[in-house]
Length: 254
Length: 254
Image (tube, rainbow over all chains, first blue to last red; front, side, top):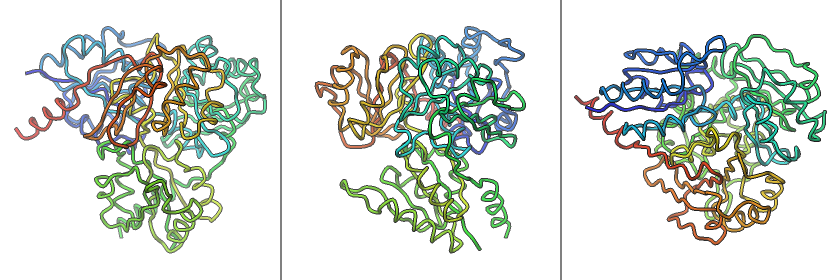
């Protein structure tokens, strides 16, 4: 009997931000291939599954992309239910497209379970809406992994009326911000960094593009982080997540 | 006792794509204020709640934005657990920011529960990754609600290497596509429309920017639709969602 592969988004980290479908797929899985951004509390839902770490550790890839394809295909052909679990959403810089092509070419049935992407959720959990009437009517999501690709993507983009969300760029925040300033973005453009979004250790830094360019943004740890640049980054919508959660628990007990 | 408000994203429509946290908030809710894009199967999860439709019907808003704020604030101040339920994500063209500001100003505790946005999930469920190595290293999400605002957002954006996702623009697809062509986008740029993403009646149309501009895209019904423009729209990753779901159910029974 043929198994299958589910390309599943794990969301930003909090297991409560998994979709119900992701939980269903994890519970049924025989094998889970997971990345560095997926936490233990999420993995624990895959009770019956063998776990296989395929991400980056200390800058080195545990398994090449081709090897990941081979493992998934072999396991599915042996009748196993495979979950390919990725932080955020599988199709937002997740190489999910390449995996889907490989699975399709091998005749392995697969499905796609979208996840909550940090591109929108990380700012939201820091009280920053990526769109807001009068401030931003569009948002551009770009990887900060490669400086030249970043510069090409931002192109002639005008900063007004748009929110720029940079994923995987926190380590290069100073040169990336410098590129924007070079292209005419105001040094005073509000900016924020949200690290470890949705997790207990979530950190938020707020400042300006100039602060980023001069390496003035201080963050502890090296968790995944999302950079937001644009007028919305100055909005400080106070959210009281913890109080609401505590009140809910108290009510449930009474 | 003070209640609270949760700004909750309902995702694209399939109740399995709700987050666990969204389900928790719905189950505990006393009052749910919901939009036109939220379906009955999602609402049913709010078993104990009074339901209040505040969206658009036949082009008219059932309740003004200010009135929505007033209802939420009054109910929370009377100790009720209010869910403000929005299709997709509350901060992606959802006016969630305005509601957060109003709640904060009124001293009402609130939290934000991100949802799966159609901006990424609708293309994904049609087998289109918004990013893909060699094809798109960034994506711009823009509203098609207003033609001039759309034109301002796309600015001098170069079409290469970028995916353009247009929400709320399906009714204006011909003039929006014409604006892109006017700005130098190739008529042959691949394009797709995904309507009613994640629902049983999901429809996918594929073609080119030129087809869109000449009003050649045929769709049935008037459900919410997402337009994707860029090289990735030509990827036809075959997904076999239904087969995987059926296999899972069969295994669970045996």
